[in-house]
Length: 581
Image (cartoon, rainbow, N blue to C red):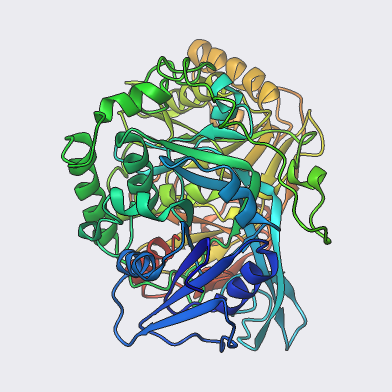
């Protein structure tokens, strides 16, 4: 193995799919590629068979993900290294494709898909569900088996990412329309940190991974900043891919490294000081040059929604030697090339996040924002004060019904996606919420799968109701509705007879004549009810004037797919936050 061309370094702690990741890499490698797996504090959960191209390093006490990656790079003698999370799949010939297109000063990220690793099958009631904790949503049984799927979710593709002013990772789907984003090799501002590829010696030229950040957090930001600020490039290679399993539900399907919100914020504070204050000793460029390179950027520039290219990008062209050429790999069954460009006829989707800023900096507010980032969708955030989240629009108005309508309208008019999901600052949205595609252009759709959660005692209830926070529809009809709603409130004042939810009633005071329909996501959203809600809280059926308003009433101590909440709201919320991979 000492003559390997590529070392795939896999740091692993309590990883249920390390074996499957190793098997997949071996199956799809077409070059002289080895695997160095660092078992960080635990032996593999499933035994790894002996293989001449696999090295296992065991630490009885965890050293952390950054230190483990550095150790793998020290062990390697290959020309190239690739860091890969221990819950990933890779493209056939990924190694040959990456090695064929990597200049010495490049850090390369393969195109990323979400990985559908397994389905859960309840052995008591037979219910089958998408990957998550080992609890059945139907019967609460824990008698669950995992059936391996192990394939990329072709509808969940990521080429481009960025970070906001707090150096918080953000997806950046809108960047793909720029001239600089075209072609098979394109610069990208950041990445999730789950996979990167580069020359091994270049890794050490940049100082390896900076363990002063801590074990985890700011991985993608660190890799991207080092690549650019050293005078090199941080690029996506669209000719190949990896698929990453995201864990967002906590419980026994959470992040394997112990992690608290304080640790994440500490890493981010260290990162901000290091990069924004130009303290990295290997830098040949200033941090502002990176911002100028990708300008305009949401959060950083007012004109970020305008398609175009930043001033430094205009002259960024590939030389003939840098342009990708065809790579021939041995023929074998693989995903069709056409399938790697999914959703060409599907509507584009975006999130409209509106807030009155009353939860700024709170555990609830931060958890909601972190959860929304798992959607892979562009986020337009409309607030009454500046926030470091999404593409932020600020309306310095007083809280109220007219203000909320104006916020929604401003966000809709700024967005450019076909379909819009309404998202509020106190609702935890499950990723399956965003799988929905509205079947009809002229109808408003509401997700009925939502539970209301009492912050005081962790008690949860659900009943059939259409909520604005669960609305999804085509942007053009939403703009028409909210333009008329704002006009009416300004001229006639707000009346509850008008209602909050478009298309949800037939009263004479309705804003328009369009109808609404419903859907249920695979897993529920969680509407967190606290002392700052704009609408009133009701925790018993007797509080409703009409029992028709609370049909399907259920009460529970736990929420399907989210775990137990009763008498442990703070602990539960911390588990949700710390499970973000």
